[in-house]
Length: 235
Image 1 (cartoon, one colour):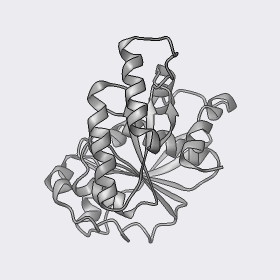
Image 2 (image 1 turned 120 degrees about the vertical axis):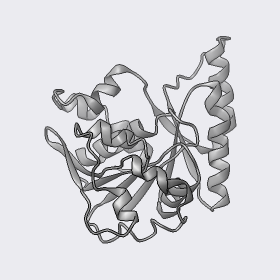
Image 3 (image 1 turned 180 degrees about the horizontal axis):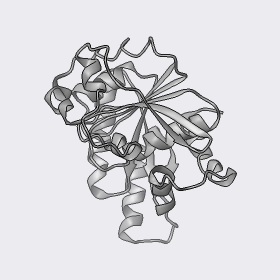
């Protein structure tokens, strides 16, 4: 079983989008996938479920309970499971032992576990990173994301882990372009180029792929997920 951690100290950088797209992409090629929502804000859970009630989920697992939910998410022929989060995680997420996740999911029968983490590199996010084989750092192209992304990469190095940066909405600027966004794009790429893993687009279609349960999963739409597989290194 492979474990993937999606992390960035910056909020709103694209972590949940990348987590869900990774699960969809892996499930589309027949992999058994479990997503784990580690964020007290429960963004992944709200995307994947219409039920807003408190669910028995990650909070209960961390406290040692055997009574928790694994929920199945289905889009036509694609499906994967997820462990929900809720606001109760706020009581413990910042102070968790960094080794909390080392073996906690090993008894479950999946090919991949994907951890979607809150905007911090401490506590539960560090525990997810410590337990993972691959770590991805989604980053939207903005001035406010550069330093948190670099901080995240440095924090991972301190625990002997390597983060791979995934740009959200990056377009390589033309050589002659002198616009504000072009300058930010060049600077961002220059500062993380040794850790750059790939790019996913930022557009409404991407959001519909995640949240619109009326969307039909045609072969063309499944092919939109293939770049995700390249980024996470799965053929």
